[in-house]
Image 1 (spheres, rainbow, N blue to C red):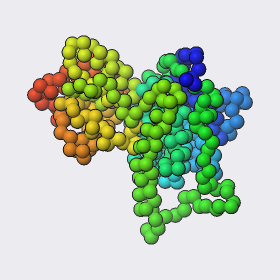
Image 2 (cartoon, helix red, strand yellow):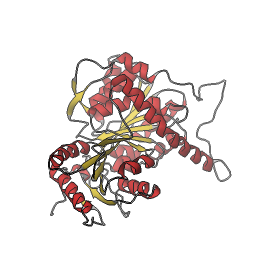
Image 3 (cartoon, rainbow, N blue to C red):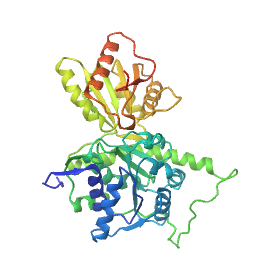
Image 4 (cartoon, rainbow, N blue to C red):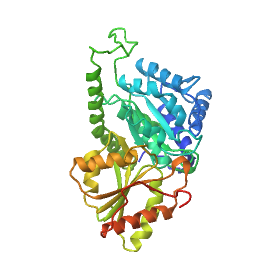
Length: 398
């Protein structure tokens, strides 16, 4: 194994900043926002201390940060940034530009609720709001996963079949500011894993002049360019898994699009994203000791969405609850729930489903909340009906 022998205790933000240091990208352009600030603050110190060769661009806003990243990546530089919540929202216009230009920018997005009312704590309304912007999206449960995903990002984003920007998510404060275990790779192992930046067309190559961001109007090729983006996203699914597998050969840590726990004989299952998976696993141990056949599916790869795989995994269960840490107002349920419903319908899988909304604005998710969901599913497996509307977990007044 190429990991260090020393197990470290770090916050999620420190873990990501360490991975960025080991990558040593050509350019980092970023603006601080809670709870992401530690990422770029730590990295700026690495720059000031001469520990990396990165050009650190201090900008006046997140819109400017992504604009600078676009210019940098279009010029052929490996480029990274980080943001959260309202900062991500302020990038909105240029987040789409980055994807449309097929620029392999890597961005850490530390999940935080979008206002209003004003709230600085975790939910997934920020990154879920950008799920259709054309960026690859990978969600992480803890500091180790966030570190590993950062190391794997450029091999995915820069792959010639992909060439798309990529964002990694983890829960604000719960992971970003909480101290947890990390076993990092050596600097040499990271450099070897990510390799040299592949040759791409760029604005500074005078021998092969190109245009980035031209007007693509009514009689242009805008439609076809959007199709090309979608085909690149489809191609990314196997590339991501191949990168996960190659990473496992180096570290022994195997990732999948879907991380499944005790699904082989499960009668009922919960599907979740992010740090709530750890709470769910703790509850599962108690319920399995009682003889309940419960399982868990943790989504890591959200864009592109592994439609066929999620349908296959859930095809054998009698009832499933999808836990969303964001809501889609006016829709049938939260964003993850809608994806699961579409996947099951598309693949002809018929099972009872319910959408549970939790953790908005940082509201606590207690083990008892998870246990109640599993017991509701067990009753449904025995013939009871599931609620047809959303179930709100740990809502005041109930």
